[in-house]
Image 1: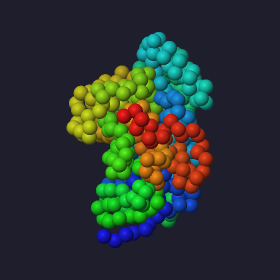
Image 2: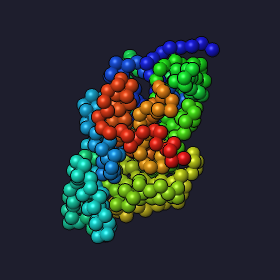
Image 3: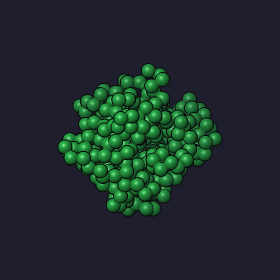
Image 4: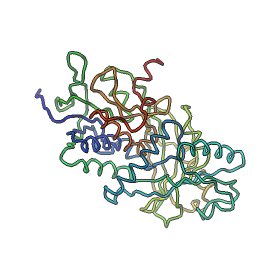
Length: 383
């Protein structure tokens, strides 16, 4: 089997996180080979809504999201308009005063971290969203929330890396190559061996499997979600709009089915309707119960959608880690191995920050924020 020396770093995974790692590594002067057993954005990225959110986050993840929000603004000026970057803001609504109190408490903590959040009384909700249902108790407007078309964003990030980024699609990684001291020397694939002194695990929901090939444990699990897509419409929904219980669902570790109303328009016209979460392995079986709940939640927020056709639905798998924080950075257990996975439903939003951090780790630069909460080995001590 021939040995091929291709690059300074191999990135496993051609989703938006892997693409961001490749882009920022190339910008730092490194040559990169991106390997994926499928196409660009063929996994979680291609099944995402493209959310770039700060409104549903707190703690270390919020700090990462705020940094990534700034990077997305820079990328929106650099990448083609086809990525459909929209700084449209988010609107979180509550059905009763109990929900409003929870939103106020959550927003107060976020504001201390630098989030812009404005309380919207019930009588002003329709100034932001004219088609919202009456009778809501109020909400919070988050102007920093945005959206992109995730598959195109991943593709354009890879292209922006220029000649320094090579893609090997349809090629599966079957093992890691290591030296006498256990250090990374490259990967073994279905097509042969590729050598590089660094390997980045950006394999999304398969990040745990890749870690096991390296002999380490990273407990990434798939968390399934469905999205309903309507027929193209005039712009009925101006922001990303979701019910207050969505934040609790994001933070929950339950394996059971959870649904909460999330509705947003797109530049192309269709309205995207979510959100559901459940841990059922990689089962893609369509669930009529989930679709019923999604439709009911969306029409409760926007009654006008009751007369709109849903053209299709699709499922995706969020790469879930037990503490809801991604694994980012070097793995001290395997010199030369870095991780960039486990972002759950936030990978698209957090991709630029993750990519820049990984590139900095490769070149020895100081990270732009404290990355200790994301250290990949943190689960070893808990096992």
